[in-house]
Image 1 (cartoon, rainbow, N blue to C red):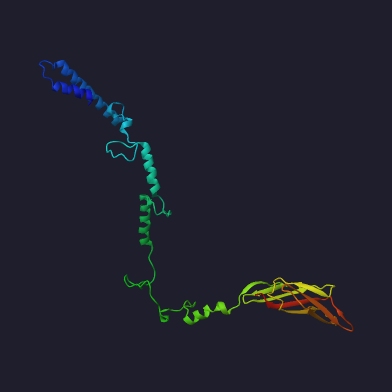
Image 2 (cartoon, rainbow, N blue to C red):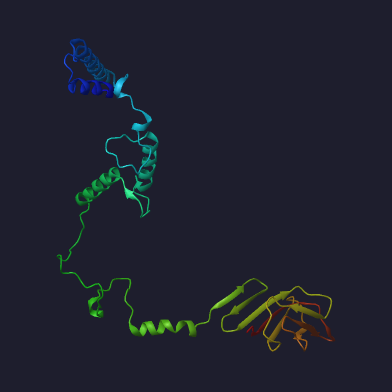
Length: 278
């Protein structure tokens, strides 16, 4: 009821003058009260029938709406803006899938229901095969097995202490290939420092030929051996001898021949050099 009608009603109630509360005065107040009650009734019917207020006390004003998330009023509606903010906060805290691994977010009720269904389905589908120990009869998390406890199959899975010792020393007793090139002109470089190089030369008119090595030796104290390649009808006697003072990365080779005469040769030849690279 409006404040004006309440004030007039209180004035009539408290009137002490004789004849002051005339029929007109009291009747006018009753008509005003009836009209206001009728307006409220009409608005309520319109709200029910049309889901929207048309006037009177059912129209929300700005002061009736809370536009903050800190207000504790239980009788005021929250603004749409604050509802949107609240929804964004909730959405950021909830995960609606089963693949996100963020530990700071909660799982949505829908995904929780799906997960419960999957777990329930596992109990019906998964039936382990084989013989299992009853509950409470399992081995300790830290325990040892004796060799007699292991049943060997075709592929051996267990190693004895002696075999482990042999395996542990293989790294120091074995020779590993560091690098290699196994062509007609190539080399083999081993982990223990051994270096072997070889090659074939197509011949030249010059008696001395310089051979440039692919890999350098540690020093010039390596062994060089050469051999002449001659035709089957050639009866000459040949020799291929390295010239003194080789370097770590090259050496010279002389080729000589002997028949009725002696001299230098331009024949093809093979060579091999063996030494250390470290």
